[in-house]
Image 1 (tube, rainbow, N blue to C red):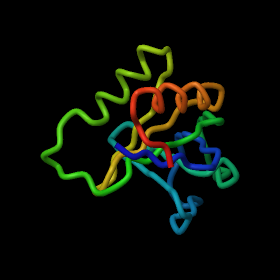
Image 2: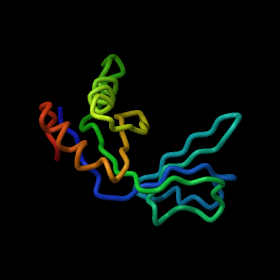
Image 3: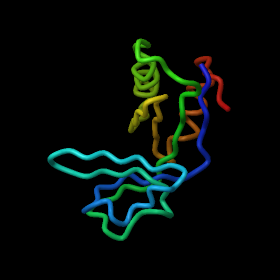
Image 4: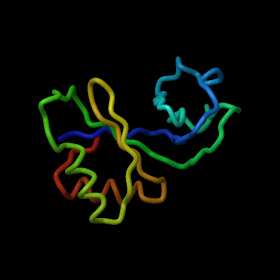
Length: 121
């Protein structure tokens, strides 16, 4: 399986509202529930109305369009990284999945994934 490493620093945020979010940014993930409004964006694009923010995340994208019938792809990756004490934050889109690891774990994640036959682009 091919994984694209993203050469950006991301932040995971809780925001008051989305009024200050750059929705035209190349990467912007938002999630809203009855309890919170979340945002994952480039660190340099964190809006001024954040309630809480965690910086220093790096991302991988599972390459290609994933069919909804495929099972266990993200589970396999997260289990492999968990066995190596690397936590993830995952975001799914219609086409694929993205997973984020802390900057301090990024090189270790690259090594673990490469050794386990993931092709890193």
